[in-house]
Length: 243
Image 1 (cartoon, helix red, strand yellow):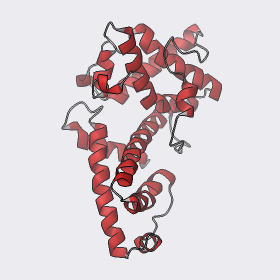
Image 2 (cartoon, one colour):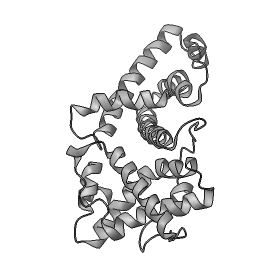
Image 3 (tube, rainbow, N blue to C red):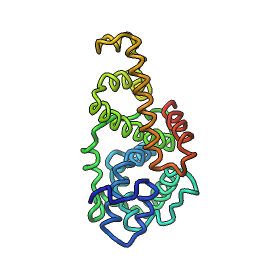
Image 4 (tube, rainbow, N blue to C red):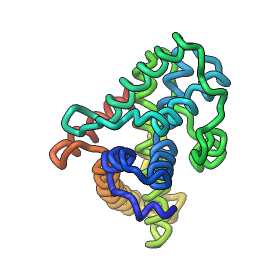
């Protein structure tokens, strides 16, 4: 089913899960699962579950949303979407421990499998989780997911507009140090690799940063509670990444 048929925000997608059309509910949940399985899976791994068990529980968590209308009362006025998801995840895990009845990586009818989501990832980057609590792992993987989705959009935009050098300079100067902890490459070196002066490389970086900021704001609007929350959420995302 075409994603264009769905609400443009993630809060809207959650609300659509309350509808009576099973096909719309199923497709909407698959969109959300595709965006947010990584923080759920990372939380479960860091909580002490082995890889297979974490996959089982991640699959079962999203399946339960579909089968039991787990987000029927989702309300953007009650807090961040990721906080709501984390609260629901903790409740789900607690219930599963009591019942010992987790689905063994078998998605509900029509729902995409976790294996399929993992295999389809174009950016397999794994955040550094050492020393972080399960809650912090959840937040960090959420933040990385946002960064990577925006980066993918920036790459496509730069390819279309003939600004491949802009993208490369931005990633190596800004993104790699944030995500991988690598040193910033001098602008003079980055420029030389693209046949540019240091000043030209700096101009490319500034242009790419502005484009990335614009695309980041568009992405955060998908799940921010309000327009006034967008700037605060972006600041919080990069604070999380800096931990």
